[in-house]
Structure formats: structure tokens, C-alpha cells
Amino acid sequence: MRVIVARPRGFCAGVDRAIEIVERALEKYGPPIYVRHAIVHNKRVVESLENKGVRFVEELDEIKDQRVPIIFSAHGISPAVWDEASARNLKVVDAVCPLVTKVHNEVKHYADMGYTIILIGHRNHVEVIGTSGEAPDKVVVVESVEEAEKISVPDPDKVAFVTQTTLSVDDTRAIVEALNRRFPNIVNPSKLDICYATQNRQDAVKELAKLADVIFIMGSPESSNSNRLVEVAKSCGVKEAYLIEGPDNLDKNTFRDDTVVGLSSGASTPEAVVQEVIDRLSEFGVTNVEELEGKEEFTIFPFPESLETKEDLRS
Image 1: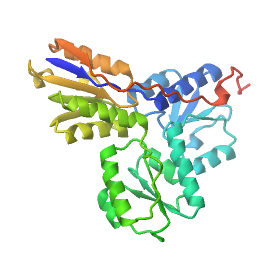
Image 2: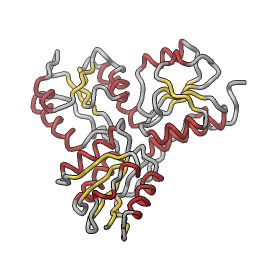
Image 3: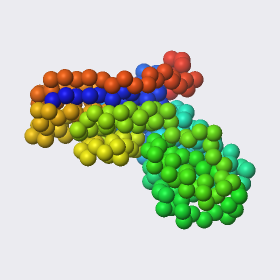
């Protein structure tokens, strides 16, 4: 049995930054600190931070001590949440991915110009909820080609679109084509808002699909980009493509001696999980592990100025 591992995989720059922000905040302020929503969508990461004194909340009224910092997760939040934090006089640390912030800024720009903004994404995803909040009266969420074909807007000549950052590139392209067909004057972004890391991981899975009999994507069920990687594998003809959280999801009886196993992981999955899965497969009889060549990623995002010094703002 062979194992082929995709590259790149796992943490992207935005996830690295968000987790490092929490770690720095713990070092600077000491526990407890609060994070609104899961800092990233991965159970392993969340549990590890909880063990260090991080408390995850969904609503700001769960925070009773104003001296305790609140960190906004990588997925982004609406202006209403920022306003509530200000009204409560909370100390906020912003861990929102800069690429998500870019989409927020585009929504504000087009809304100020009087456009209807079509947001391509999953309407119940926390990123989409936050982005929509920038202009709730102007944003219309579209999830599918079917919705794109039926959508109605006040002025067909004043329409722009943006996208959730963690979608399938191929699925998004089909929706964009439908929107451009229906609204010839629609304003397209300079490039799709799908982030570089999402694109790179999907491209790597496409290459993996050419070689593997079965593909396992490591990630949490809540992780949009991890789910999209499974979809990409299946769209490339891999009938057995699964989302798993770790080695406990593997069953030795499902593998043959000649099975070629492909592995990758979502942008919020620690590399340690990939190694644990490889170790388990080795127990099942893996004789060879190889890594595909792939794009190198060098992107680094800056950290909030408030975490560049050691001053404890609780004092």
C-alpha cells in the first residue's frame, strides 16, 4: 500500500496568523482570554487553546470582565459586532484574515456607490454572515447556479459581485458565468476573492486525484475549505473521497495491499494530524510514503500592533 501526500496542504497564512495572535495574547495578557466563535474551524486547534485558558463564545454578552480581551476569529464579523464591542468598552484584538477583510472592504465600496452586491457563498457560514453585515440591505447571497439564474435586483445595471474566500473555484466559476450572462454590466472583482491558499490546495488535490484510489481530507466538518477539497476530489473522478478528523476514522479492513491512498488537509488542520494518519496507515501495512511537488507559499500577514509589545492592558 502506497501513500501520496498533497502539497501544499494544511495551515494557510491567515490561519497561522490567527492562531499566533491567540498565542501572543495569552502570553501578553495571561488567561483567560475570549475568542468570538472558533478561531478557526478545527476541533483539535480549539481544544488545544481551551486547555491553555481560551474561552470561546458566540455572543459578547457572555464576557463579564471588561479587562479580558476578546479576539475576533479569522472568519470576520459584521460592523454590528464591532459596534457592540465598542459599546461594551471591550478590548478587541482583530484576528480576521486580511483576505476576508478585503472582501468586506469591497462590499462597503460598492454599497456606498449604490450597487446591489451579490455575495457568492454559503449563507449560513460565519464568513458570509459577517460579510453580509457590511451592507445587509444591499447584499444578496447566492449559493448556486440555479439561484443565480433566478435572482432579481432593483437595477440590473448597478450590480457587483464578491465571493466567500473558501469556495470551490470550479463551482464559483459556473455561478460567475451565469451572473455575467444575466447582468452584462455586472462589476467583476479584479480577481476572484477565493484566497490563494484555497486555490493552491484544490490544485494539489486535482493532481493527487490522478494517482490515488482513495483520498482522505483531514479537517473538521465545519471547515468549508476542507469540504470543498472532498468535492474537488470527487469531481476529478475519485469515487472514494472522505473528510476525516484523524486516524480514528480509518478502518484497516477498507484497504487492499495495492491501494494507493491520497492525503491532504484543509487550511485549518494542523500538520500533526496528517502525520498521525500516516502513522496509522503504516500500522495497516503502508510500505511507501511520498509527497507530491506543489506550489511554495511564502505569504505572511502582519500582526495587530497591540500584540507587538508586552504591556499588559489589564493592569
